Amino acid sequence: MPTETLTWTLEHNWKEIVDCLYLGTLLHHFYNDREMLIWDEVGNGWRITYADDVVAEICIQSQNSLKVTMEEITVAEGNDRFIPLHGAIYAYSKDGSKRDWRLPLDFQGAPLEIFTLSKDGRGPTPNYKLSEQTIHLKLEAGVPVKMEKR
Image (cartoon, rainbow, N blue to C red; front, side, top):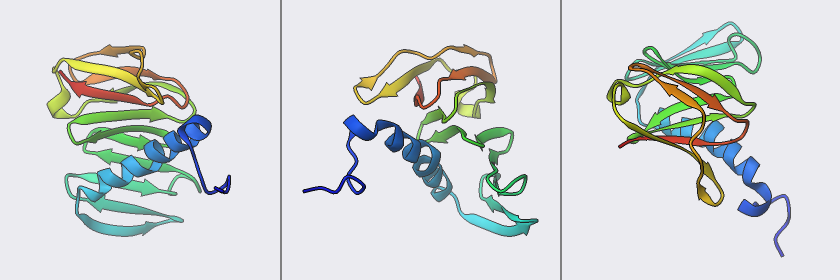
């Protein structure tokens, strides 16, 4: 008999699973695609520099702060994610957000397919406005979004 605290199901734990995947696992895969170059202590936190001009600042601004950038692209800030990974971008906000995100060079000016994800598969397109270099994206709390080039 499975123990409730040890077994998650999509039916009962969708939110927890999505939080783990989008807030942690996808970001971890993003890091693992790069070589770690420098690990510096900064105040009570750390600045970790990876190849490809990726910088992760952890607990520098506050005890729970997180900011990850790749050159001019914000990949993670607080509980918001915009993770370019393996030909797609995975966007997520734990609490909901409406903001501009700079697109990676290979996504700039390209036609995009943008959709939400649910336990039943692809969902509707979120509210967005695309420009040459950025996307203004409204992320509903806890609703994962995937972007692909057409």
